[in-house]
Length: 125
Image (cartoon, rainbow, N blue to C red; front, top):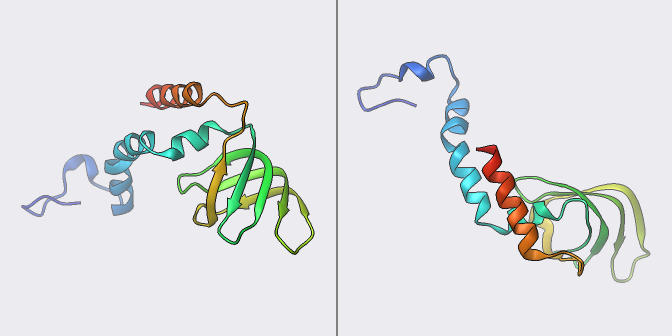
């Protein structure tokens, strides 16, 4: 990253451009995440959820982690697709671009889950 005069600020000397971009956008990404449903889905980690995929498959299992692109990792998951037998998986990764719906379990308090996630983000700043 350079200024108009073409000089790199001293605090950035020796860093690669990718590092600079990450450094400058890190705070914006955290703030942006708080205003999305990704924040809520990350709050569902540890719960049993049902995820519908774009290919009409339904996956049920315990949500272990959610990445920045909404990719979900599940354990003890079962995948059901119309016309095919149900498959069992010990662990399964679902890319975020394949997810159509994430069903919220009935026992989850939505407002409490969101409050907990917002507090986690505030604690990381």
